[in-house]
Image (tube, rainbow, N blue to C red; front, side, top):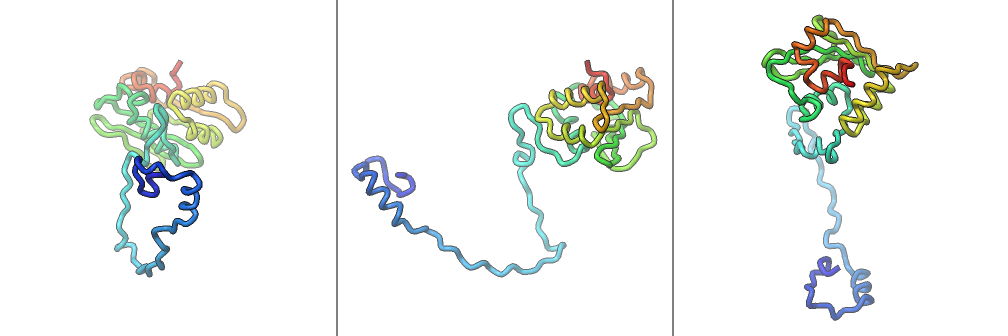
Length: 194
């Protein structure tokens, strides 16, 4: 209350009733101004709004931020220090997914970054189909551990409308050389997490 009225700590001689009266008679310092007319702008004149990255992806401690698409969630997990641990520049993988009615791919070329795109690819290592109900649960998972539990539960115990189906398009030794058995997220995506 003292800060609100600009009083210092020495001025404690006022009583509670005087403070209440002062609050009732206080006038807001700003009066609402009339809105300024907004000039119409064309899309080329629009200025981009930059949002600090901490605001976009500020999860609770040990948690995952909210993502609107499954591809965004996977790309975030590849950058995560736990889920994407042991991912090396020499690793190379090609994953294709069918999730929430969308077909997309995630790939990493030798010495390149992890990329994603929509549509099908021809040389995928693994094809993963996730039902809509499970995809929504995975998007709502607060941590990578919870994400792993949900993914493996529906991979091992498929139900009507709730499933994760994994098709390995290459043999396991080729996948192991590509890094699938070393990176926690890749191990999860091919269903080898224990």
